Length: 199
Image 1 (cartoon, helix red, strand yellow):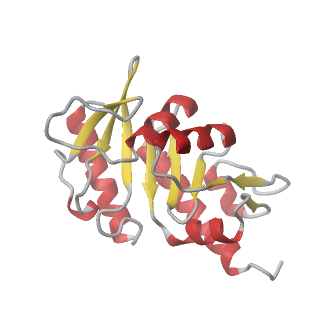
Image 2: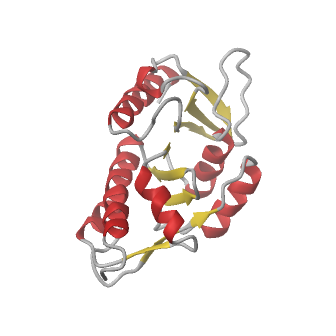
């Protein structure tokens, strides 16, 4: 994927998530891998309304979240995107501020356990007889700290991370797989939060 295609795809996904209420204001950021060796990603720029992004509102970063672009500024969280892509092998990383993951992280700061729910299949796990734990890590403005927390909790079969009182990261082979996993995970977390205390 070249930078122009990446920009169009990222802008379209941001518009979709904004319409769902998951990227309010300028919050959230998405990325897609352009090259693996060395790792290069296209990530949404900082400080722009995500519902109004154009194909040019992306910037190329390296595995550490840094860029040589003299004009466009990547999200402060770009370094975590690079770390997730490098460790997991993901082709795309999405970070949104949906409410259900943040509330779930508040109730279960040690990790959110999911089990025996059909929607788990859409998240890439078995619907029954398999306990899925979505890790929850404390928020930090230091992407090295967040990256270390992600890596210490990373499991190849659990493509998500909740950052407490902040948002959720989900990844996949491409933007479509990451989107589908995120949508299914949001449903799972909404169910878990809304049925808390009844099971």
